[in-house]
Length: 226
Image 1 (cartoon, one colour):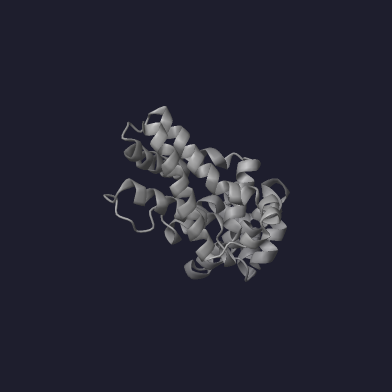
Image 2 (cartoon, one colour):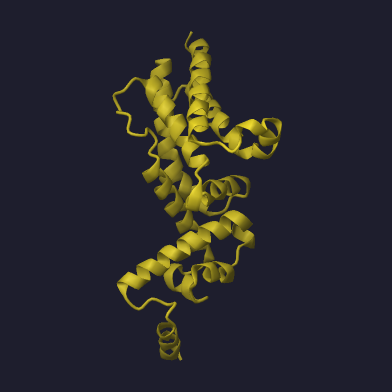
């Protein structure tokens, strides 16, 4: 019976039978799953719809990932890695640059990832869903991806405030910086109606917004430093 099952999988061209096609099918599943999870959320997304969009056999998810939960966790890792490769946290600014310059780069990078357009636009939407409806994958995502970036921001702010990174003021300021960035995404339905001339955000507008958030934050940090 098992041999018959394996034969039937290999007989279907949607199931990979060599390294090259296996890697391509896996990539297509990750991209399709990202779109479906971003649109429907983890709970309502179906393996059948993911495989349909990936043009893969319905057994492909189990073949490559084991189950829907593992696929979702891998999609989160895949989307984070792709986003940070395209927009690294400091956007090429040197580690020994002035902290104010590093803060602006950090903010600009975060905004670029949040408002990514084109084929990868689902990445920001997927993370927004995960924040609202957290899954079991969030804990590992925090430890593997989010905490290191958060530590980097805290170190930048600690340099600006000239205090230890574990100072409570650092955490409060870091939270305020990130909150300003995500506000424009999470509250977009309201903000876009209040200020329609500002949306959609293009590259120039995102850069302008990064400058404003940085300038506003630095001005506030001066009072914390005193």
